Amino acid sequence: MAFSKIVPCIWLDDQAEAAADFYARTFPAGRIVAASRYPAHGDNPAGKPRGSVLTVEFEIAGQRFTALNGGPVFVLNPSVSFFAHVDAPAGADRLFAALAAGGQELMPIDRYPWSERYGWVQDRFGVSWQVMAGRRSPDGPMVAPCLMFAGVQHGRAGEAIRFYSNIFPGGRIGSVEHYAEGEGPPETVKHGRFSLAGQEFVAMDSHYDHGFGFNEALSLQVMCAGQEELDRYWQALADGGQHGPCGWLKDRFGLSWQVVPEKLSSLLTGPDKAAAERAFAAVMRMQKIDIAAVQRAYEGE
Image (cartoon, rainbow, N blue to C red; front, side):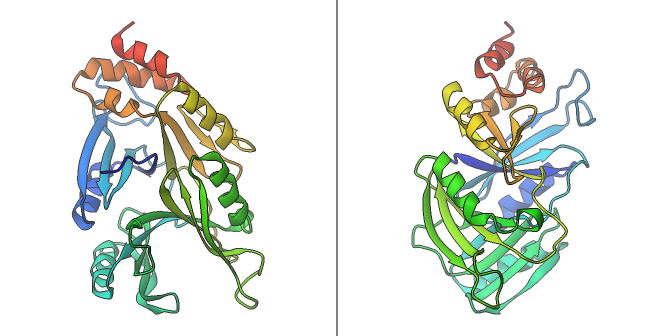
């Protein structure tokens, strides 16, 4: 399993376990990695039962995800979706049917000009997937996040691709296709592919009035090896945006990020429950995460 520098985080009410299990069973190479819990002693900001599941980390098709039980605060929408590339039309049909069960079809699975088999679906948990047969490089990932710039952010996909590519190591702009005359505003992005820290992303502008945009329900976690790296991403991603609590921020396009230490997961999911609760309490008091302070809290200092 390759290390995921950028980990999508799915905000749910109390379905993190069910969602992680569903995705691990539905996609190839799926597995549950770890789970963290709210403190057993004392209340928590989400108002969840003490000791209940906070996060579930899982992997599908080589991509790490986090499912978070955060309460009914934010609602998932298709502004952030995930391309799911499969090799053959029959595989696309099977995956689309599994994801659509209990969900909602946004574009029916069918033949389109850009793919022999394609469909867009919002699954039972509210996560959006674009299932496509073909159209990936031989070593390309099966799963790639897709950012749709709509509403007040419409027309900014190209700017965002350049912004993110300049921040992350190995940032690389692949292909950027603009709308043709009659399809949409010609200067806007119809389909753009770019790579950040070795992970592929897709971005597009949509000139339709969807009535939704980026929110905290789908955020991107940046896993940082040390404080210097964390500080850099904390400042760079929030340039023109806004810092928030517990390592969260919104960038200049309204997309939510969590800038967190790589070791935070092991601190919160380890066998020493009392130490994990101290680390959790320390993070709850922070805006930018201080790795050393969290470690000291974990150790009881």
